[in-house]
Image 1 (cartoon, rainbow, N blue to C red):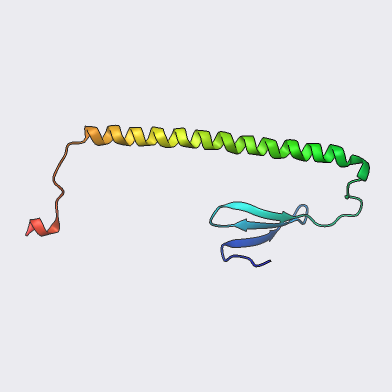
Image 2 (image 1 turned 180 degrees about the vertical axis):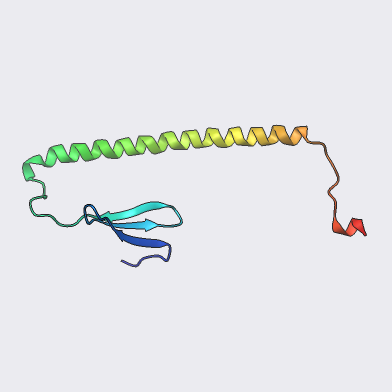
Length: 101
């Protein structure tokens, strides 16, 4: 798979997993765990594993929804604070270098 210039591939010293980190985002974009014998799930555990994975995905989705709700509130608060500050400042004519001659 082609890597971007901003991506860095690192091997974890603890578990030997390969991590791909995007330097611009500051996040792990992908990881690949090393193949271990006996680590493959049994077919009898498939239903339980699928249910756990579905619950994990739902949890991550709910966290992202809450983060987006809070993000909008935070941006609105910052905008209102900047608007209040702009109303308090006196209106002045901007100085230009041309006017100083």
